[in-house]
Length: 309
Image 1: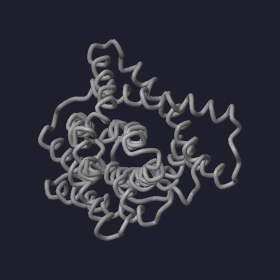
Image 2: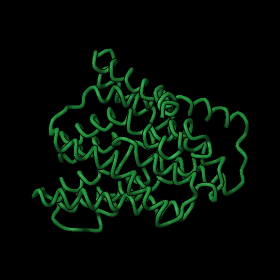
Image 3: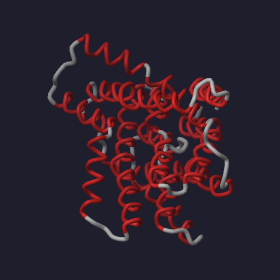
């Protein structure tokens, strides 16, 4: 446990540094927004493209991993949905609570951290889990919330979802990288070094941006945020572990990676969506804050449990 904690501590220390910079206003919300944009559109996309271009589709895609991660995520999504409906929430708010319960920070935190803590072989399963989050569940939230607001399901909703996927730089980077890999097109050395240099900025930039963005998060709706953080940090990894180890016989190392990914705190892009649709931004904000702080301990516990260290 201590060895894992010491490995993850520098990553959370960078988040803490960003939080201090944001809290003291040394780094303003505008500055945080621009740093986030740089990481999202340039640094992280370069990292993902380079990883995907240097991996084969066989090294990334594994049907058992897909089924286990989908199964575990769907179980927790349904639990959060039922609990929200029993509390009398409307469909849009219910959809956001379910989204908070299962969507972790796989891009900004998981990809750089788990690749270091678990080794470079973890990159393939992390990218696969990230792809499922982006393609399946990020599409689902748009469909549910838009349908709830419009009062009906229409073709335009699916057109909006498709456009959102095409415009997402992480998805584009994955697809282009895999296309390069499938075509067996070697990256010229200057290009590979450029991508490596730009991608190297993703880890410190993303973690600092997470911390700086947390400085503006509120701690309202404490009980709800606590419940959603419990779903994300405890129920989600347990459900994915059940799928991976009990039902779908996933390779032990890949299972460790996707369960660790499931243990990550709530992703910041859920808050952006909540603000965009003006649906429950306070509870989403609080859940991101609570889960990120708690994950300093819980993520290390989960990885230590899985690796036996």
